[in-house]
Image 1 (tube, rainbow, N blue to C red):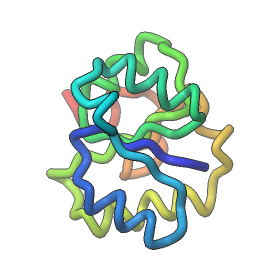
Image 2: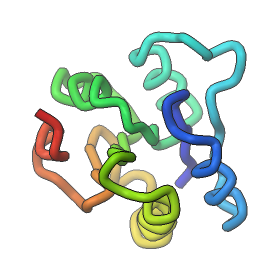
Image 3: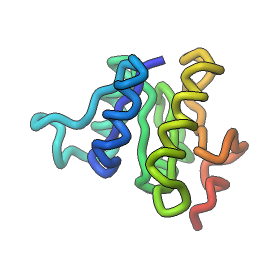
Length: 119
């Protein structure tokens, strides 16, 4: 499993994941400011699981936009260290294909995108 972090995710999370030798990319100059669907399409093309704390991605998931998976981590609910630990655990325990077109919340698997604790 490889990750792509959107521009709202702190770089400290990317660095923490990289320290564990996990392949992760962040938004570069070409993608900075790009729409969420462009970001999601990039992650699908790579293929990478999109890591975000932006609830707009939950809306895209409900609209059946194809993706390699969305890992939603509401930063106000978890510390950076806890988010890193949970993403590492996801990487260790699930094959990438298990997330295709599915949502994963830092709290664990959720049956519906909006059940990640976002109204």
